[in-house]
Amino acid sequence: MPHEKWESKLLEYGAIRIKKDKVTQKEHWKAIHRPQLINRKDIEILSKYNSEIRGLYNYYSLACNVCAMSKYASLMHYSMLKTFANKYRTKTRKIKKRYFRNGRFTVIYKTKGGMKESVFYRGPFIRKDKPNVPQADILPAYKRYDKPNRIAAKLRSKTCELCGQYTNDVEIHQVKRLKSLSGKYEWEKVMLKNHRKTLAVCPACHREIHGKD
Image (cartoon, rainbow, N blue to C red; front, side, top):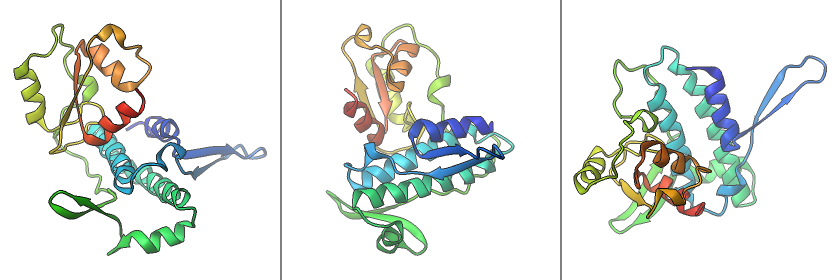
């Protein structure tokens, strides 16, 4: 698991800021809040962070040094706390007091089936002998557009093709024409690469896609 890969992900998400000491040239990493998330619901913010952590872990789960995910998850955790603090215009210590249950950051949310809770994912990040989910960027590039049976297979796989997260709530994002995609966003790149007008994604990624439309 290359250090620069998970570092670049943190920078891409806007979860950290890196400053260099002018004298020693030593890098100082600081977790920061993500302004683009503060207007979302609590469960959406938590799900976003969890999907980004699980996605990277699934991708590098075979790496001998996958334990490095712990530092990545720790920085994401502090970034999330600061995002919640900025959302509610308070201090991170008050956010911890409000959301921590049994030592874990927990969000309680309402569903049609009643109240449920979700916790921040912090591992364990253990090396695996074989992958448990397929990765979006190693899927075969189909030359034909998806047929109904292929869409059904994507739903059965219960895997987000964008972040790699395993989920029971796979949703299908569809576009009318591939020509209408510019390739500006990651989901567009995946669809163009695989020559497909549909994409099986988790709810969090689907909301992000429509937020960028």
